[in-house]
Image (cartoon, rainbow, N blue to C red; front, side, top):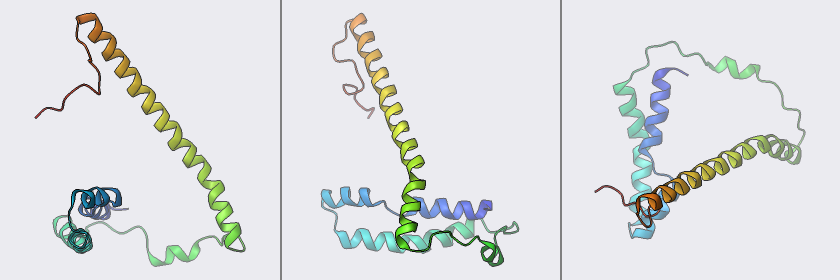
Length: 135
């Protein structure tokens, strides 16, 4: 992937709205048709602006001929393909679960350390939950 292609992908990702964020905005009362219209219009606009700001100057490594050399899948039907996909995703799901658990443990450790430190210096409720964002 060239730098221009990467720039286009990242610009498109930043220009559109995620489904969960869209749900939050809908919960705040923003009209749904406005959100969907903005998301649909921003995709081609992001690609155009990305290509204007970072044009393609490198040789593209992937061509249409590269896809003809792909291996034929071993699965013979939809059930086998779904089973193979589920089996292959176990490692990814396990990795995500381990990362979430490790992050939560680290967060709990930092919180416990802050509470302990707060008790030593005489501050009550000194934790991550009690801290206020800077305004």
